[in-house]
Amino acid sequence: MARTPAELVGAQPDPPFEITFDGRRITAVPGQSVAAALWAAGILSWRTTRTGGRPRGAFCGIGQCFDCLVTINGDPNRRACLVAARPGDAVTTQEGHGHDRLGV
Amino acid sequence: MTDSASEPYDLAVVGAGPAGLAGAVAAAELGLGVVLLDASAHTGGQFYRQPAPQARAARPEALHHDWSAYAGLRRRLAESSVRHLPGHHVWSITHEAPAWSVHCLTGDDGSDEQPVRVRARAVLLATGAYERHLPFPGWTLPGVVSAGGAQAMLKSGLVLPGRRIVVAGSGPLLLAVASSLAAAGARVPALVEASGYLAYARHPRALAANPQKAAEALVHGAALLRHGVRLRSRSAVTAVHGTDRVEAVTVTRLDRTWRPVQGSGRRIACDALAVGHGLVPQIELATALGCATRTSADGTSALVLGPLQETSVRGLWAAGETGGVGGVRLALAEGELAGIAVAARLGAGRARGSRIVQLRRRRDRMRAFADAMAAAHTPGPGWRCWLADDTDVCRCEEVTAGRIREAVDDLGARDARTVKLLTRAGMGWCQGRMCGPAVACLAARDGAPEPPPERRPFAVPVPMSVLAQCADQPNTAP
Ligand SMILES: Cc1cc2nc3c(=O)[nH]c(=O)nc-3n(C[C@H](O)[C@H](O)[C@H](O)COP(=O)(O)OP(=O)(O)OC[C@H]3O[C@@H](n4cnc5c(N)ncnc54)[C@H](O)[C@@H]3O)c2cc1C
Ligand code: FES
Image 1 (cartoon, rainbow over the protein chains, first blue to last red):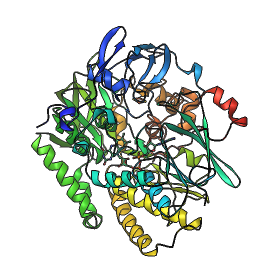
Image 2 (cartoon, chains in turn blue, green; image 1 turned 90 degrees about the vertical axis):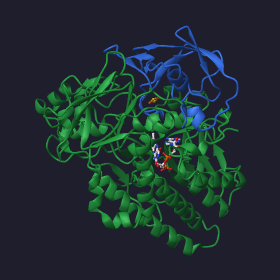
Image 3 (cartoon, rainbow over the protein chains, first blue to last red; image 1 turned 30 degrees about the vertical axis):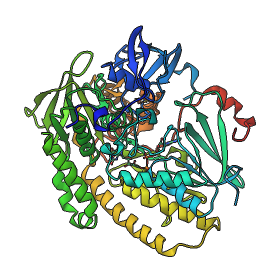
Image 4 (cartoon, rainbow over the protein chains, first blue to last red; image 1 turned 120 degrees about the horizontal axis):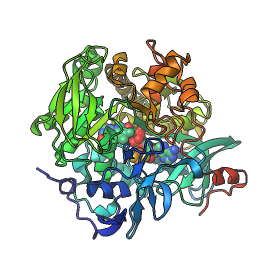
């Protein structure tokens, strides 16, 4: 019986690379979303809410809930479940604010 | 016929899931110039979601039934003249005679600089569904993820939200999610279903006509047994415990109306919860164009479709979950039927009467089954008793159940729109996708809730700069 998802599908991924989350180094495999790389490192939250300051991370996993918003290389409000991780990405916890750039 | 590299195309297909793929391939094989747009970098949609090519998965089929159907479509797509545009997020469709304009943002999350417009004589909407959520105390805690989301992250990212995952909510998707999480190495201590599965027994005719569905349920059932997953029906997770992440959940028995049975709560230790209450058709691109909708058996809004999948707006077709949630095989049949119908309308190919008859029969049979399933999993009104006053209902704007009750009981709001104006519930980033069904129920008090109208100004959030540019936008780029 498979013990990991990668074993289940017989994945032999291209060589992994590093990204950072709030300065901490974590490993991502090519093609993985930022959210998947964070989950793989056991990290489930990377945003705090505007009003309550509560921790949030990926919820819907498919780009619809916007709970996974995060700052990537200084750029806020990126959906971590959609954006592919790239070598050297600096991912940082996003605190509060939201709508300034988008006209929802 | 236009050649596929020039505009306008004969057909623009929005969504490259099972329905959109089947439709694009069928239409192209009958000679149409087809463009296939999807927000995602890959074809396959929700069901055939798969690891990125760089993961080099030797057995991608391990997480899917019916992989061969997808492999066949993917091969036909590669051999066809269809122009596939991945990473295109469609935010609006407009009609400027004689063609439709499909407006897109580009990039992984739609944040690339260059917006794109694609023109086509007909449009097939195959945008699928999103998951329906009912709030409960603790559902915003990290480690609580949507059931379909856990499945999606597993299928594409090969990751799990925890090691010990309770699966809960309602609907057939939970069976698939629990069995794939367990197959991928998670321990699934319980699958908690709010309905009684016996409800299907009330529709023996629909079941008998769909032996494949019964077989699928058996496969999942056997997998769950093998992995030691305990099935608890007529129960719900009514509380999540933990401060910064999930440590345990309370599972409570429900009566027929989904009201918790006092004193029946049991704590189950876990580090994640995957939860969802069925699916909602994603139809805002169509409702913005005035397409008629109907309320389906499970209380969601779906598009009204003619015998050959055309919406109430001429020239605009739909297939798959947009016409009512019904699963992958129905999506495949409807997509193909729509592709053939568009080709016939535009005068391409020879009439394929016998195939049309066969597909229509298959579709009607599966729709009847889908309706029976939907009815069995319709939320009972008693779910509202799960809520504490401080439970967040709207995740984006952090609007609590207490504030919504105030708007309803004290200020007289009777529908989701009024509640939204009074409390901001549904006004945030997700535009009410996560809280809409729940807010509609709360606003209806004891009456039957009106399904939210699924009207949104844009299908995806749009930067102001793009809106400003819209008037003088160039036609599709490369
Ligand atoms: C998160 C999730 C997980 C699911 N997992 C399973 C499962 O494991 N097993 C199962 O049997 N069923 C699953 N389903 C049910 C699924 O809806 C159907 O079985 C099947 O995938 C439906 O096919 P479809 O072609 O109608 O839609 P989908 O497969 O949902 O395809 C729709 C496509 O349209 C694209 N799209 C939507 N809106 C836009 C837009 N505005 N612009 C551009 N592209 C857009 C999406 O990216 C997607 O690729 C899941 C559903 C969801 C929501
Ligand atoms: S997890 Fe919902 S948008 Fe990313």
